[in-house]
Image (tube, rainbow, N blue to C red; front, top):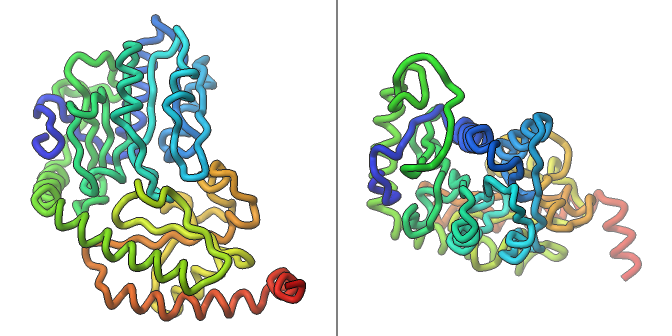
Length: 337
């Protein structure tokens, strides 16, 4: 609670970020359906948000999915225009899990506050990576997850501001102040608490170190590899996130080649790594299907060293060039030049 400026009686433990998101959206929707049935979210949200909203649409709720710009930013004007007298909830992520863009949550939540609309943010990626104060941000609900800050898996939190109208969807015992039934995951809670404490103590150093390594990685990739695009906002992005699109190659081929030399990456979100479809986030930025398919996300963490970045910058250009030499489209384009 202290790490986010909340009171301890506003913290509710869940099984993770996805459950927290489900509870926030469904709980507010059904608790406030006498006031309206309209929810606002964005096209680049995590699937825990998108699929929950799709579920509610089947039950008679109306959902507006806001567009984003080429960097993944949401326009405050677009949000204001989307609000109607039936809007009961706005749910927008704090930072995107794929492209790392950090949204202006304080500005967006102030719009909701002026209209008397409940505001939820999925801060799973932001918590432990940027400074968060729920009171300063003016939010009503916030989802976070333990394993994103090196805590145990299977434990998350939904922050519920005192006075927020929300119902429970787990019934049975009187756990979690009678709001979420079921035996508490005590080892998970203790581990999450310790991880949050460590993250808060080291936050400034964590941000500084990861940003330095991330910027070195981005600069090196952009300078040594042609036909590459940096995805996400160049300035307002998570300290450890680097996401690129490489023209003329498939993300899956790139991942396999990197894995063979001991480099781990992803070509989308961790939750959709089994899918061959291009990322819904990258498609929402307006990228062509063929370019979105050539995406690579590299994440810098607390255990990443400068030597690791140097190794990536040595191997990645070689692998990209090798894969492009096998691409008929690349060879044709090069020949036309």
